[in-house]
Length: 430
Length: 199
Image (cartoon, rainbow over the protein chains, first blue to last red):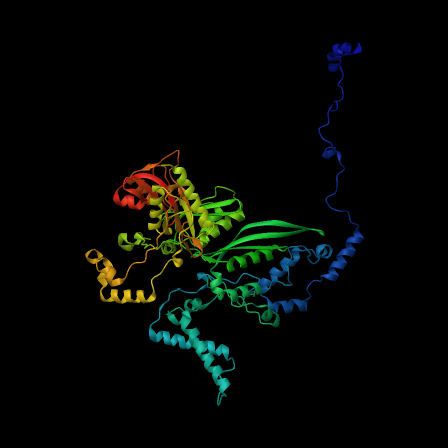
């Protein structure tokens, strides 16, 4: 430790007043880079040599020349003086040198996917042209036409349509049968169209308002897309009636003796899906297992399993087998089971209890799905032992489809059986 | 009155029907006899016969009336249908219709060697009597009133006895009017000790 320091502190004040010491640099630097003032100033413009600039303007002039007098006279034929002034003003704002230096065809992701100067409205790619009420000159008033006016309007509209179909006029003189048929068809179509046209149903003093009724630009509905007619479009077009044929589905329809509309009414739901592995000497073969239920929600219920290396294939298999396995489920009053049922599959025991009307399906989700597919409405259930999903579904299905019916029990015991529920309340139960 | 023997009967009948036996035997007691007669009345059993250790002759091996006799009986009954109802104590019935054929079964003198032979029933490849369980247990008897039975036969629980919820389920009770079915007890407003339930 130095002994000089306390001495300097003692005299510091006296010396400070006597001589102005230079400002001390900050002990600590707050920034890693030098402050802005410390940097060398960059010019706002690049310094270009005069001959380079001259060469550039010559090249730009050559590439984008000014309009000469013949071109201006051509433009005057096409455009009004105001439009020409606008064109000139627009071109004056862009320096040809900049266009020469920077101008290039777009290659960004947002460029238009087709070559177009955007001069015309395309009905497919652009928004359709829309007109509102302000585009109609005069009062837009019209009233319903009476019968005479309607006939006159229809005749006028139909003749307009026919004139469009036959721009060169209807063929005169003797017509061959094909021509005659074509003409009759055209006339019939024109009259039908005229009957549907709003211009024939309404009339008024302002013809523009009447015409706007049939103008698609005034319609709030979108215009129909143009119909593409070429070989490619015809081959790839699919009607809603000829859907793709699944060979498995076709086989199923033959097996069940059903139509497609009947098959569409069947509700299917895949309740279990998991991967399974077959260990072979070559290695493990993974495949997917699916368990699907099918029901018509009116007393038919089926459970099907499918397994395949391809997930979609296995799923399809299970759906088809579920539909094929559908069995009738006897339902009491079309809503619940005949008494309590119990079924055991493996370590799984399922108990199903019949319940009064309005009780609902108070069961676990798998049994709920089965009951819903079968069209049961009132049911309670317990799965007191194992709750293995596959076994719960199988046990429930077996319990529902293999019920002992009261009639059968009565026949077996040789007793007479009457359901008194249908006797009381004037038989208006259920 | 031991319920242990009844428990044995219950499980034996379940086992016999699972094994698809046509005829089986149980030990004889007054309660067993009344219970199996109740079961037969409800249609669970086809026949109840008191016999020995060997089974009684099956119906087909019993002596049957001749076809001529049957024809004669049918003609007679068609002409005089009242003969079927034992008119005037049935004095002329035997003379008119012929003697009734009754199969005599030899019952051992020793009560310990007597057995009750029961014919089991099957329908559509399924036993008619599938389940038979005790309600009262040897250590816990359950007595039910007719009010309880009214609830139980309408599938509701009462006095810790579950309702008769299975299709065609029956419960037998021992009452002071004999062994009766639960619905019969309700009809006659009787209570009693629950024995077993059958379905």
